[in-house]
Length: 589
Image 1 (cartoon, one colour):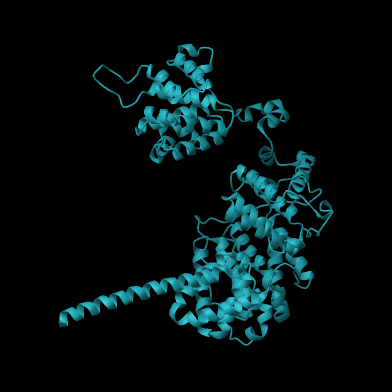
Image 2 (cartoon, rainbow, N blue to C red):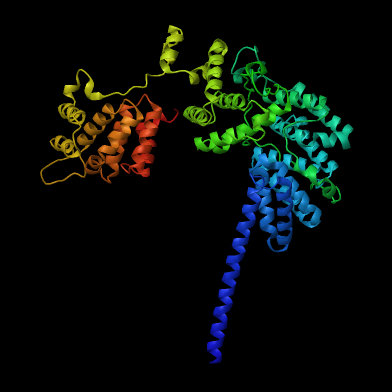
C-alpha cells in the first residue's frame, strides 16, 4: 500500500473516531440531563437512594462534563421550584465530594441572580434566592453569607427614590424564602434573624395600601378578611415564627444525609449590588389574596390549613405554579393538580377550586382567557367525579350567597350577559355589552335592495336542504362580478360571491362553534373555488366574518383559527386585515 493511501485511510479513521466521540459525548450529556431532570419522580427506590446514586454518577463525570452538569442544575433550580429541596440535596452531596464544583455552582447561581434582577425577571430571582436559602440547610452556603444577601434585598425598603412596588418585590422575595431556612437561622443565628424580621415589620407597617380597595374581589371582610398579598405572607411568617419555625409541608431529603453534608466546607455568596430603579422597569402587580373556604366548609377528611398558616401559602403557590406551567394543556394541568404531593394530608379538591377561582377573579384582569378556567374545572370533574363536582357546586353556591359584595369586574366574569342586563340599574344600560349574536345583513327588512340578496336566500335554502358543494357553486356562479369591467378581463375573484357565501354560511352555523366549524369543513371546496390563494379575497372573507360576528369577540377568534387551520386564509392575510385602517377602532378592544 502506498504511503499516500495509508495517510488517507488514517485521516478517514481519525475523522470517524472524532465523529464517534462527539456522538458518544452528546449521548452521555443527554443521559445525564434525563437523570437530573427526572430525579424525584415516582420510583421503586427511595428518593434518598436515588439521590445518592445520581450524585455518584455525576461526580464520576464532573471532570469531562462539568459545564453541562452545572447548566442543567442551575436551570432546574429555577424552572422546577417544586423540587427545590431535591436539587439542593444533590448539590450538597456533590459539594461534599468536590468542593470546587460546589463553588462554581454558587458562582453560576449568583450570576443568574444578578442577570435576573437586571432583566426584571422577578420570579427567577425569587427562586434563586430560595435555592440559596435551602443550600444553607445542605451546608453548601454559610448562614452569614445568606443573611448578608437578604439584608441587601431589604435595603431597597429604605430607598425613597424608587416606587413602593420595587421594595415590595424585594421584601416579598425575602419573606417567601424564610419557610425553607427559617428554622436553620433560628437555631444558628437567632438574633440576626430577629433583626431581619424587625426590619421587615417596620417596612410592612409603613407601606401604603391605597391600591387594595381596587383589587379586592369582595367588598366585605366577612366571612374572610381581604388581605393584600404582602400583609398576608407577613402574617403567615409571623405565625411560623410563633410555631418555632416548624412547618409540615416542605420535604427535606437532606436530613437523611446530615452526617455527610455537615462535614463539607461552605461557600460564600459573592457580594451583590442591586441594579438601580429605572423608569422602564416592570414589577409584579400587587394582588389581594382570594379566600372562599375555611375549615368549616370541609366537614370530612383532612382539615383545611388556616389562612395564616405557612402551609396554606406553600400549597397555594405550588398550585398556582402548576396552572401557570400547564394552563394551555387542560388535561395535563388537571392531572398534575390532582396528583399534588401530600394530597392525602389536605382537602385538595377545596384548595384546587379556590386557587382556580382566584385565578379567574384576579384583578384587574385574569392572567388567561376565562374559558381556560372553565375547561380546566370541567376536566377536573371528569378526572375526579366522586368529589370534585360536589366541591365545585358548593363553591358556586357560596359565590351566589356572597355575590352582593362581589366586585363588579368579577361579577361580570361569573355570569352571562342576560343576567347582567337584568340586574344592573336602567341608567347603566349603555355600559352593558352588545348581545353576542350574529348580524346577517340579508335578513333586514330592506335587504332586497342589497346586491346578492336573492342569491343569499336561495343559497340558504340549498344549505338547509343539505345541498352539495356543487349545488352551492351553481347558485354563486349566477352572481355578476362587480370587478368585471368588460368582457375581455377575467377578475381573480368575485367579491359578491364571497360576501353572499360567507354571510349565509356563518348565519346558518351561528348556533354554536361546532355548527360553524362543520359548515366550513363541509364546503371547503367552495372556499377553494371562490377564494383560492388571492390575498384580497382572503381578507374579504375575514371582513365578512367580522361583519357577522362583530359583537362576539370569542367567535371571531375561533373562526380565524379555523380559517387558518383549513388554509382558507393565510397568516399574512390575517395580519394585514387586523392591522388595516378599517380595523383601527378595534385596536383598543
